[in-house]
Image 1 (cartoon, rainbow, N blue to C red):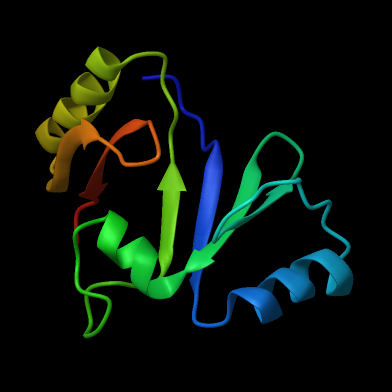
Image 2 (image 1 turned 60 degrees about the horizontal axis):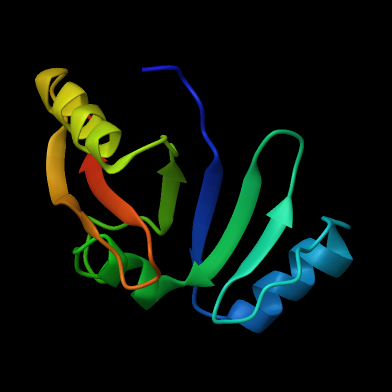
Length: 117
């Protein structure tokens, strides 16, 4: 696997306030995008701000308790087959698969894993 973090997604309880903070407070360039998410272009990666509960739901984990910390790191690859391979590589390295590779409702194909604890 070529190491790359394409998107850092932060879960937030207040999307409007968080978007305002990064766009106007820190001056991050906001991308034009419709929907319940805000994207900012950074040098070589994107920052996404997404509602906390929806981010946990996307990862198939509970949004409450001690397991979910409100952040995900995305590693984008070229094909569905490669997504499956990356998840297998992570599992062989000791990761726990928390969402197996599958088509998403937004048109992508993804899975989630946690690193060694």
